[in-house]
Image (cartoon, rainbow, N blue to C red; front, top):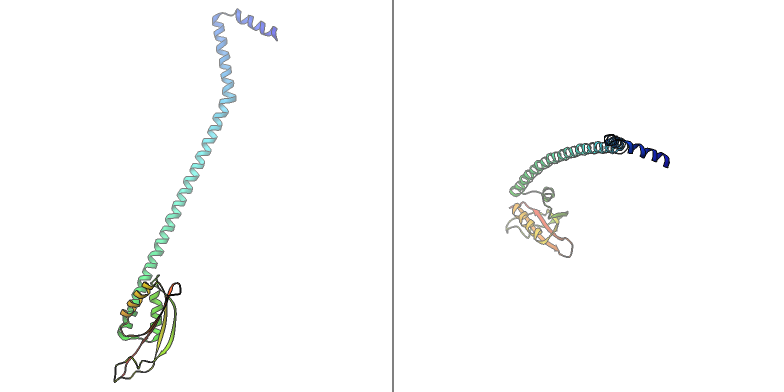
Length: 208
């Protein structure tokens, strides 16, 4: 091996400066080609693969984002349509309830009609709830004017639940909306949660 390197060194020493420069340039070119073929090209290929995968994933993410946005818009549109439909239904129910209240206020009504009206009206409130409605017999002779005659009529024991102020506000509103109705006893149970109040309410038609 030493002999081979010695001969090679002797040949290089025998070369002219121009020959040595050309030999050095050839060695550099060969080393560059080897480096390009075995190191740089594989790295470039891997980089291209990674870039292609990133572009693919980015496109998939964009597609999923667009699909998600479309789904959200569709759900929002459906919710808006449903909300508008519910709003129209609530407005229709409110108008019907107001007509019922007006009819009860001017003409009076029996216990069944008042019970039905109360149940419908209480659907509008999230502060006062209807616990129960019990039909009872009520003697009206003590509350009608002197010289008139009234038969025993059916009344309602209405039990409501809610905060004290909300219950009082609701009862005041109910009394205002039903001027033709008679009011009996009011029993407040403050020990329950929420507070409960039981009101006796009945309508009457007084005869001479």
